[in-house]
Length: 334
Image 1 (cartoon, helix red, strand yellow):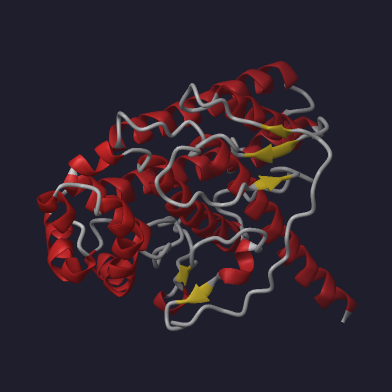
Image 2: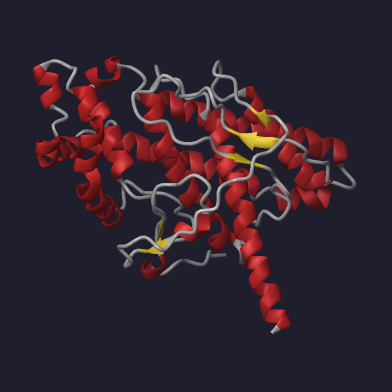
């Protein structure tokens, strides 16, 4: 059976995530060049300690354990008591400004995660994919640029900067939840947004790159943004490798969530088998994420990224489903 597809006019984009702002309020259509009005709502402080990802492993074992608890809550109804958050220590030595700490208290976790061919699949997971992309752009560049040595690999450094300048997007079809580097039309949109903001990203790096040698510093000169971008387009590293890694990561985490409805039907009668399946699938998913991150930048410490993905994914999943349920309740009461 063919999946439903989104029309080109329904392709969604999300600007850079902001602290305390609901991801769903940031989503625009392709034709809307100005961001929607955003009502900032700071997250209230919590008394419980957050689940922190230790900066010694990729993916963090705590993130894996948290995902298993979310899964077991969705399938067996086991309680959720702690916060989800990224490691506040991660990126403490970054040369770039570190984004605010993201944390989220799951209410229902992944309990209502849509199945692959359900009517809610496109609406919910499109928002989730955009939120994860926005968070990755904030954090991964920050985690990568933790020392001046990172600028020695000019192609990779410029590629990451261009990727940070790109705007999160999903494709015309429901199974395209990130940029498809083989889709020329979609990549054209990608470079459209990079060209608009790439110079600004290079300006952000300027105070850092001025301390490099004259030749290396010139490779990041904002006045030469157009010339640098030509080099980025020709290189298969940096931008293209990150877009591919991003697509794989989002595909894996969505695939994991779509298993829940099937396991929920088996849970009451096959608890032991389902428990084993949960742990196996969660560990396989995060191991795949680990491979993608290491393939992209083997020497970088991305140990906080799995917790970040889990936190943002869970937060946006719950918010998206809550919005759908509120709309349905409003229609019924009207």
